[in-house]
Image (cartoon, rainbow, N blue to C red; front, top):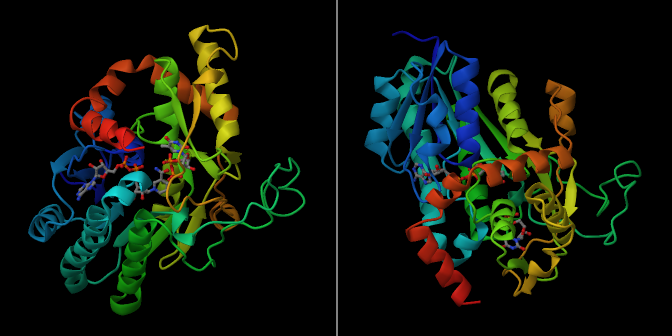
Length: 372
Ligand code: NAD
Ligand code: TYD
């Protein structure tokens, strides 16, 4: 079967990757979508059950650090586009085991770049695209200059919790091993444009939430714990601020930027939706209790303040004006709507949660809590 384009999506069995794969497979039957994923603890093919038999979809279990395999997959399939999401993605794990973050996020990205270059450069760069998905965490942390939260913050300059945002011009100041590894991979991607002329694009997105997120991250972990009436471990005093975006809005942005973004550009992606952790957690409790038919506030006592994360970034806030102005992208969901959809999904998909939280992950997690 011959396709208009052959595109590798790395990390397609993970949280964001599975939404991107689904969107591309369904929207572009004329494209061949190759999901290349190692299936680490965070990758789960159950995330893609609904599209696994589509004629324009192929799954290949492979490590992005394996140069020969990656190069073979690119050349055998005549790949002309790569959307790169595969990564180690959890900050807490990067604090415990930084090496695997350097290996996957830095060397894995370099391996992909070089394998693509060896196949693409002799043909010419025309029609090729290497799109690297990164994070706002590479910019470091912002100040919390409006600690009480100003509801009019967005109108009077900056966000509700501070005057400034991360823009595409911000210098890189990563603090965690995770963000340091992502920052390094971003530099390699830009270096491949500057040095070889490879058509690259980088986007830096804020925190995502929605279905299929591995329940080590705040939102799915807490929904599951509320459901099972387990303690909610809030780091520090819950004062840290994150900017949350519904994952399908991120996937839509990736589709738009892959097709219409300008080569060698960086685009920030975010929802102008800042939340202090403790306030977000209260919304999660309220929404979960409501959907489970429990009296409002009956699970507030699950909140348990624990030792803060080492080097915990205080505030992230993304300015995505460039993406809106140049390509017309905007988030589609209001936060309350997105959160309700998300809570409902996790409550309705207990099998998925049980499946991904069994085995090795369970052991890892209990050890992490033992040491607190
Ligand atoms: P995830 O941890 O849910 O999924 C990562 C996927 O990559 C998994 O399927 C895993 O099996 C795969 N993978 C890991 N190592 C691999 C390797 N060596 N070879 C091949 N596959 C490998 O991550 P996510 O939250 O979906 O994040 C995806 C990307 O988006 C990452 O690059 C992350 O840095 C970036 N990002 C995430 C967020 C967020 O809030 N989750 C925000 C901004 C950017
Ligand atoms: P997380 O979902 O790990 O994303 P990131 O660290 O990439 O922002 O965490 C979101 C916020 O929630 C962050 O400030 C850390 C905090 N947090 C807790 O308070 N308790 C937890 O158990 C987790 C996982 C996170």
